[in-house]
Image (cartoon, rainbow, N blue to C red):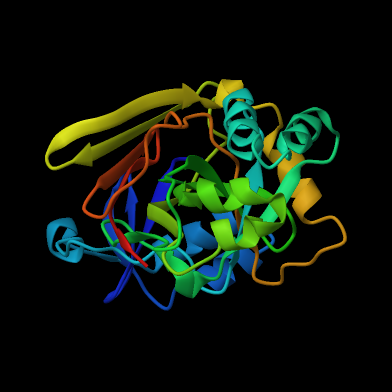
Length: 282
């Protein structure tokens, strides 16, 4: 199917397709995720949509995250680079062996990341904890998974992480990962055919107008398949409103880098656009 981008704004939901830009009427993300055929559901919604002026609809600096009632989860240690980084952060506490084991294990690392209220949209501030000394963004391809467990779309995710807190003890993972502004999603939810293997993911961090870090990877480097990760998430677990699942990162700044308030994080994923967020203290 042709790619359709769905934008969530304070004034409503809008869609961008090859045929133009439209205001969706009576459209909800919950209904989309609950549909047995989200692509067909979206096609029907587009048939009832009204043409809209894109520049005025998206004129605000901030977009809402493309989420309604969906839980936001994340997978870890899915790229070799993330395995190395997590081992590095946990080495002093003696927990590095666990990340080595999970990379090789059949069962992936999955953890709860955010409620919709804790998530931020395009250009909204993401946060670092004041009780953390080592903080990084993690650029992640994020799966839109229907209530039936099937992947039907994608968005860009920023899994903000406190490496100093998690590095003290792996049991501190929820505090390192789950807090206000610890997650950004957007700029849109893209309903489309599966992304190509090798889709590029790029991270850039600006500080005081200068490049402070840049790096890239591609989805060909991920160890686990997207359907595999979705299957594990839905194993013995139900999501009546569907779920969003971040799939891990292969771009990690070196251990001598930490985010500071005022930094700007930009994540680009081919076919999904660019997610930009300034950084502030939680």
